[in-house]
Length: 265
Image (cartoon, rainbow, N blue to C red):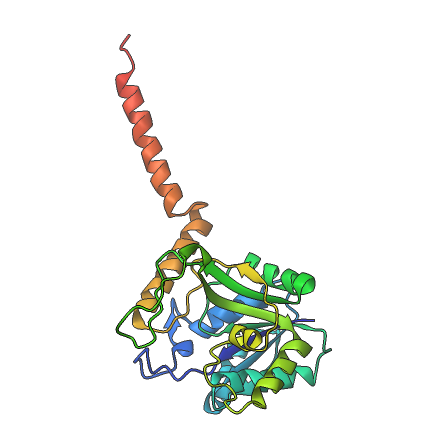
C-alpha cells in the first residue's frame, strides 16, 4: 500500500485569519482540499489519512464528502504537538495496513507539490528505504546561535531546504517515533520526520522537489499560492506558461522586425 498522511492540525496563529490556515478558501476551495486532491488523483496512492484538531473532525469529514475525496480511510484527532499528531495517524494506519506499506507524510498546507515528486518519493523508498523532498537553496544560509551574530556560513552548494512529502516504510517511521518518545526530551526540537530519523542515525535519501511546493503559513503565502494556481490554469488553458508567453512575444517582434527589414519589390 502507498499511503498519504496529511497533517492539518494547525491553529492558524501566524496567519491571523481567525480560522486555521488549512481551511482558508483560495480560488473557492479550502487549502487542505487543494492538498488532498493532489493525492486523491495520483494513480499510485491507495489510501489517505488526515489528522486535524479534534474540534474540526466533523468539518473535515464534511469537506471530504463535499469534494469527493474517496481515498480518505480515516480522520484522526491531532495530538499535543505536530509530531504527536503524526504518531496518532501512524498508529491508526498500522492497525489497518501491512507494516511494509509506504507512507508519505505531508503538510495539509503544502498544496502545490508536483505529481512527479510524489512518484519519486515512492520509488525512492522502494530503492533506498526513505525519501526526504528538498530543493537546493538559492540564497546564502547563515548559522546564528544567539540570533544577533553569524557563527557559520555553510557552502550554498551543500544546503537544501527540506519540504514534504517525507516518506518511509510504515514500520520504520513508527519504530523511530517509538524510540524518540522514550527519550527524556521526546519531541523537543523535532520539527519533522527528517529530524527524527537523522537524530537516530538513520540514512536519509534526498529527492528533488519543486520550487512551488510552499507551506501556506502567512498572508504572503496566500498570494504566492494564488499566483501558482493562475500559472497552472494558464498552462492548462493555453498550453504554455509565463516564460513561454514572453518567448512568444519576443518571437512576434523578431518576425515583425524581420518583415520591416525585407527589401521592397
